[in-house]
Image (cartoon, rainbow, N blue to C red):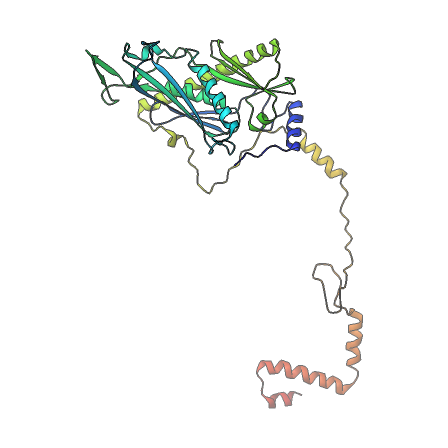
Length: 396
């Protein structure tokens, strides 16, 4: 199943809104969507929600032989998966999905592994024989744009939350202790690099931070800057084939430094909250983070759309509108014997009231005709009431 492409009307609408410095969800040009970080029951499991984009990161470890070129360093391995559950356009057989997967994997490795954010020498158990291999699996659960930023936040949060088993060495024997025997050991992390994505439109004329899925479909180019809170640039990735000026890159780096500081503080708060809950013995994990609502509850998100001068505009439209006419149109008689039901409508039964009264008076002229008429009425009425034949004759 392929993803639904944007129509020309949607494309023009998005570009026109960007020119007027407006976005679909009511954000400003440099605003991020709401970021929610949740940790699982096990160490190293983290879910990040960036708006409607949802990413799950899981960290695991195992003892493996080291590389020959680096016998005293551990191994870092990153794996990112795009499933059809996240978006209909993610199909393994499609070339576009494969290229996107390779690009995201390379950017994630360049951001976290090549930046030396983790002390790999501390992962060595026996030089040249056994080292820890740290594996980070990132799964995209829902795609609504800006996968790179969500994946980097989820990966570094999971690495900070992860605890590896403690080991003991006696001669050539290596003993790995379970969490019940010894407390797990956290990783040694120097800094936390985070990616910030910038989308360019109209050949670099307009700039947006944290583009959503529809904005990514109409953008001309993308610039991804990986930076830590110390304002050290770890990696820069540009795609789309647009030419960027030096001033534009410097401007993006200044914006990225502010956003990275805010996100780093958010990650530290989430880690501290999880550490406090585990220490107090409270409930934690994904199930506890889900809001408890009834299944039948109706909930709809409201975007903070700019609502200026709405009441004045509505009053003006009401004043300029023509007042409805109070005259009631005369009913149309379709055929004799038909009628219309409604308050204030005229008689439409084909016979006017005056003609009916004249006809009734003409029928009452003769006494015999009057008696006959009375006899019929009495017979019908009293007959229904249960009188006998003799009683009816006496009444007549």
